[in-house]
Length: 111
Length: 115
Image (tube, rainbow over all chains, first blue to last red; front, side, top):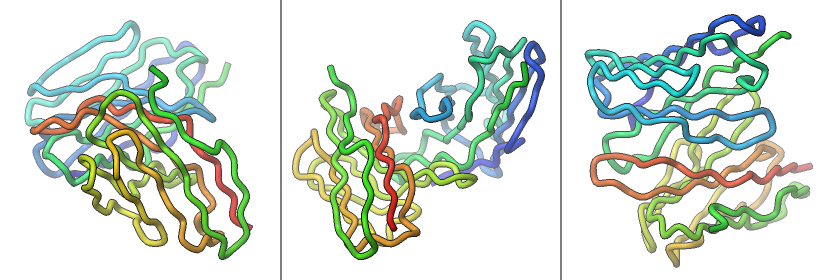
């Protein structure tokens, strides 16, 4: 299946600071999904991006799909302690090779 | 709807023992999959199924078997447990779209320790 490189792998921020994680692919992606996994929990679906240049917002979270559909980003404004966790961006198009999640970005927030 | 359920929640095995991790979903999802999660390694796909009677290997299939006799159930079998299989195992399911994947619903996980 398609794979992406997600950066950074770890990010420490002070509570109230902004946070951005990036997913980059060497090939054009059909779709991409974003998930959040809280410590000790299971991954939970956040959103799917399908269109070139698409921007979607969920409260303080902004998701973007690049114009060339080779990259995506998640930006969190004014982080809160509830944002702690690991964020994954599996490519979700292309049929039945299985959905690969990779290592994700671990967000650590210092109060 | 119970969603995706996994049993057991915790398990300790001795090297060489076999066991089956259970996964069931009540959403009539065609697609089901198993992942393992180890510190620093993210989620790695073990096996997946696009419907009853159809299974395929993911990234790390060695040491594991699966079968899909019904739409609801997708058990994962460890044939001869090894310490390297100590991990957290997640089952997931979704509708299977012709052009890609729909939202994945994950179970709560099984924490397995092999001594």
